[in-house]
Image 1 (tube, rainbow, N blue to C red):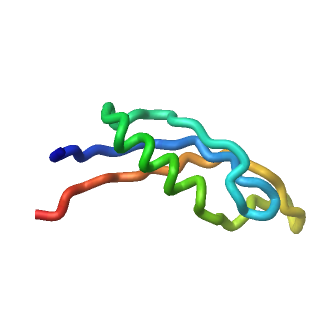
Image 2: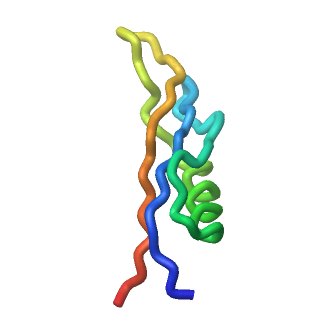
Length: 70
């Protein structure tokens, strides 16, 4: 389809480093790319946030770029 673009996601990472919530902050303007970014990042694991030595949930911005190889 020739679609390329970047999506910025807001991701809530829980104390275990898994995705608890996720929303599109900035769309690529292509629904297919946005859905692929959401689907992929939902499966990721992260290093959880910390306040001192305690793990805490936190929101992070995650950019995802979809680019075709030429």
